[in-house]
Length: 86
Ligand code: SF4
Ligand code: SF4
Image (cartoon, rainbow, N blue to C red; front, top):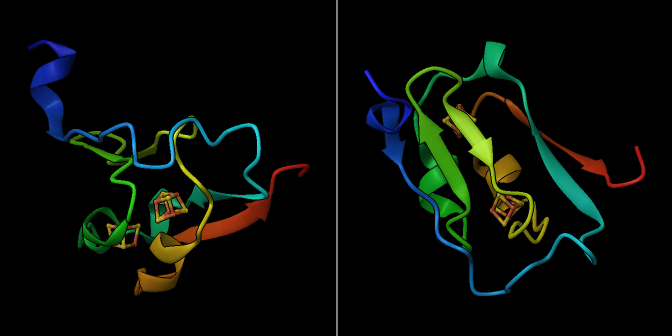
């Protein structure tokens, strides 16, 4: 089976354009805590969270603006916001 067949939700490029140069924080995913509720994906204002069958959540950091909404909405603290320098 091809990789693309495992893709559950495909992200867009976001309304803020390429944010990787100015973003202060980035979301980091903790797969062991994730209950696969998809709330982060539904609430992301930029639609930059990709959902896969295997690793499940992938952030498109090129277009993520680091707003932290995904981390705030996650019921299991499976998303942590960390400073870009870390
Ligand atoms: S921090 Fe989370 S909610 Fe905000 S743009 Fe990035 S992935 Fe989307
Ligand atoms: S909101 Fe949290 S628990 Fe739900 S799918 Fe996203 S990372 Fe997983």
